[in-house]
Amino acid sequence: QVQLVESGGGLVQPGGSLRLSCAASGIIFSINNMGWYRQAPGKQRESVAGITSGGSTNYADSAKARFIISRDGAKNTVYLQMNSLKPEDTAVYYCRVTAIRGPFEDVYWGQGTQVTVSS
Image (cartoon, rainbow, N blue to C red; front, side):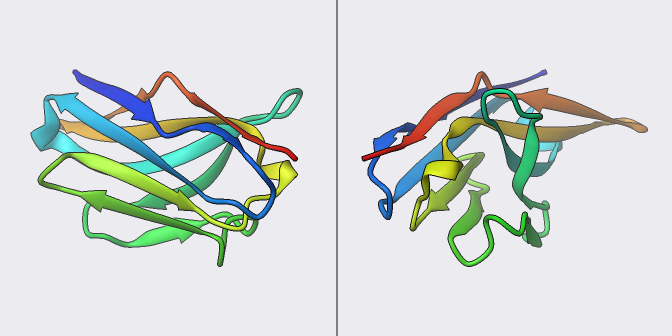
């Protein structure tokens, strides 16, 4: 089992920045990929950014050039630095982690953290 605790959400003005953190605990040696998703009211949950165990990253088009995902292996934490925030970035942001268990890959989700971009 892997437990995820997110932090860093809040209210920010357009053009501002926020840094989300997601700390993993539990069977952390099996953690594989880490990433961030978001869900705005009335919309489906969507991928924002991901990072593999090897450090390769991928971003949604909406996040490219504004968001940076990183991970700290020693702290078992994944971060999402969000810059130049726009009102359309308003959503609940969820951390997603996969962990290897034998031939299987389990998926774990954080509880979500609210990001509101508004003046």
